[in-house]
Amino acid sequence: MPHAHLPRPSARSGVLLAGLSGILLLAGCSSDESASQGQGGIPPATVVVETTKASDVSVRQDYAGRARGAREVEVRARINGILEERLYDEGQVVREGDALFRIDRKQAQAALQRARAERQVADANVQQAEREWNRIASLFERNAVSERERDAARSALDLARANLAVGRWVRGG
Image 1 (cartoon, rainbow, N blue to C red):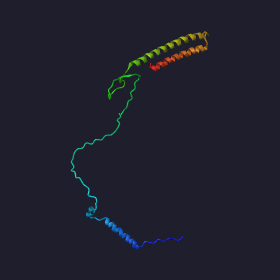
Image 2 (cartoon, helix red, strand yellow; image 1 turned 120 degrees about the vertical axis):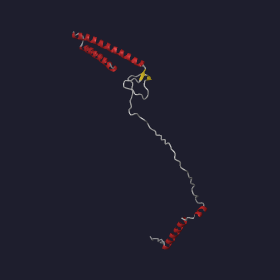
Image 3 (tube, one colour; image 1 turned 90 degrees about the vertical axis):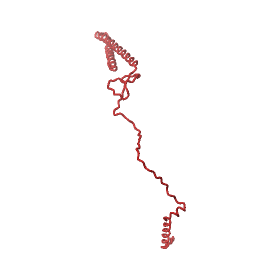
Image 4 (cartoon, rainbow, N blue to C red; image 1 turned 90 degrees about the horizontal axis):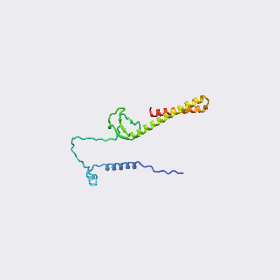
């Protein structure tokens, strides 16, 4: 495959190219202002001059944020009910034991009456179980009842006493 030989640029064409580049560069950097204004050049910028005055300026900056107290306290009622009145002012200092709210007494009184009735029922059940136990125990000594009946009477007495104790514990007394 024959190689095609490209002619090498001569030194004369290199000098000619450098000379033309220099002329174009000098023509672009001319400082002839009259020529540029006559050819539609950029006019000089307009400058406004102001005199300064010293005065106080208030600076206001607004920031979004959330404030929290150093201590937070959770307040809970000991009983359920409907709140009738708040007995303190917001931000007021209160001490342990201070009344903070007035709660409707109807529900609390009904719950108290129900608890008293349950206590009476539990007391009556214990008394009945004790009487039954005494009766069955004496009959068992005379072989008049079975061991199973005696155990059932004893279990009934234990259960009645446990129910009474649970009621006292739940109601706090």
